[in-house]
Image (cartoon, rainbow, N blue to C red; front, side):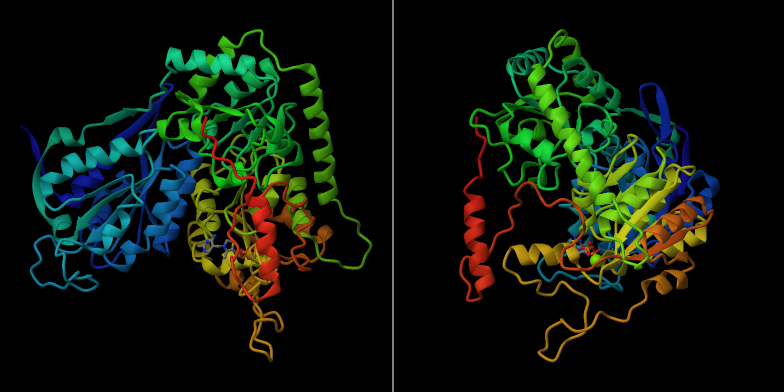
Length: 627
Ligand SMILES: Cc1ncc(C[n+]2csc(CCOP(=O)(O)OP(=O)(O)O)c2C)c(N)n1
Ligand SMILES: [Mg+2]
């Protein structure tokens, strides 16, 4: 047997450089690059191995471990999960900084390979710097925090154990059901240890990404349910994009006239101007989609997890006899809401449905009713985007910011967002023009995702204009990777929306009796509350200080010009805009459906007492969907 003598870290890097995915005959490098921040837990192990690998494994330098995972996730999502990044960290704080990013990846089912350093396996001098030392469990390290947020976790405590661990890690990363964060914890001594590896370990390995076809019995039951339905509604989730099933979905909609609503992850599955596209659904949905959901007799969920935003916390689907058909590659999701499961790849499943439904079409009256609803919603979006230049220098609403962006983008632009009040406004208003344009991370809705994810997307698609939309709160949480964009010359475009705090949570707080407590960025007033003047903080100057080109438009007119300039810019550019801050005015239509945020059952303050009464009225509409 031929062997090669390498350290564990060198062997891992060499192995990863030879892994490929293949779907529909297209082969790609699975691990395209490795992000890293070095400390004593990986500098001489994985760090040295990356140095030694030369071009075989490109290295990317980040500023914050969580942000590196976000960048990796943005990259994987834009690659339809067929290519991913690895992230190496030191031990202790470097490793635990991964936890939030890992949870985000796993919740959204997006692949990322995490390589945190770990404390010595041989433990010659406990405690090493940054070691936890659990008094009752000698084998626990802080890396165990990564177990519940990883789809596969392994600790490589002996060199030869890398072989099964690495193979399992890659299997999970490339698996369309199981994928998410995969963690290989690497004790710092083991990383540097040499071993004689069988040469076959480093051979090219191609992981076929399967498209399972539906089971005939499940398919027959689903087809029967669709044929019997008078008011069917299809919900497109993120699985439609992951499976590249957009054409198959359009074919089904064209053939049957079934209207298609979308979740945050699924938006853009149909182009916004397709006659069957009725926009977002749920708490942040359109009036037309939510009205249809309220009376649908059959909901066909495709690649959706049915989050509480989608179901309006189990109140949206209100018809007494409503039933569900769930086309999902994951049995876990296919069985939700007591639906008829159709366990299959989204594209294969949609093609099978279209074939079996030949000749079937929804009633004409139903089609014309939702077409009218779609036209009305279009008018509501136009109204939210509209503005007059009456020369008074008025600041734009957030909806007008979105409208201004809508006016400058093309089909190829990518718009990224994750948290704050923007996701709801975008879900309601954005007119998605292509399958990858609308990039909302709303499984974990993590403040700070946007800027690093934009870097990841731009690495995946160097020719596309990539926009990160960030609120001021989000910006302050993680502006770090602007430096990375500047360093690498990655021309991301950041739209920084200043409204002096958490407009979203402020509005929510008010609705649930919280009186906006702790949600504005203001000085303390004489009474000790944060109701004084807005803070004299200049986030535009902050972005400029990190190396960004910064534009500071004030009015809608100036904003449009600035966005056009940013779009044409060759370097990373930030458009800083202060919006109208009158309480919760974003300019978008209000929520059409409920969201369950529990309200204090007993309180002395009248706002909470009133909110509780309202809460109980809304909560009475909750359903269990058991049959
Ligand atoms: C990491 C993280 N912490 C807390 C939250 C809860 N949260 C959701 S939105 C929000 C405020 C966002 O503020 P900003 O980015 O300014 O957007 P705005 O609400 O003003 O639109 C908070 C604190 C979150 N989603 N992510
Ligand atoms: Mg804000």
